[in-house]
Length: 116
Length: 113
Image 1 (spheres, chains in turn purple, yellow):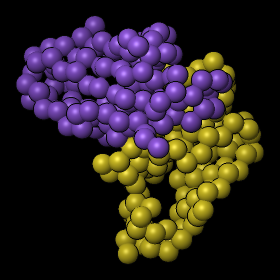
Image 2 (image 1 turned 180 degrees about the vertical axis):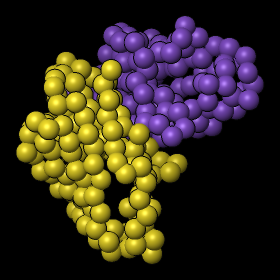
Image 3 (image 1 turned 180 degrees about the horizontal axis):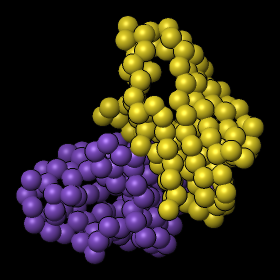
Image 4 (image 1 turned 135 degrees about the vertical axis):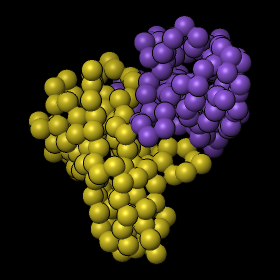
């Protein structure tokens, strides 16, 4: 079956440009996560949705970052006025409902964002 | 601040060698530990989800152990093959109601044929 897909796979933006990154989770997965992986580091949590509700956005690094999942399926991560430090791989993951801690999270291939 | 550490940072082995990596995590408020394999240009793939102290899991030539009291997990690969070349990530979940994975920086494995 289809896994988690993300688009675009690669994005080059000029500093100050707005970008939108898309995530299509596995059908039926209630939970959706965004992570940011900077070069040489492990992925870091950004935000979490359960259906359309954004339950945790504690990892968003600034108010330039905004995520939404209006119909409880596709999610978009938007970054306004991009800065060079936003350059990273942005990973999306989805999982089934239930006790989330031991649920496997299924990851997409990521979007590599380069801000010039 | 939760700190998950992995060692070594990178590893180069010959085909057929066996190898192991370490993941260290806080021993208090432990709920689950996840291991992922991430090949270049692909999606991270879950290897194991471990929750019980003393747990041992195996998938083919790869196995993992868990010690929650001392806060570490080992990942073993027996008879490494070139296709095992990837970044191996461990991630910690603090509590039953926690959702976010706290990742280590990963171990990069390169297997030479």
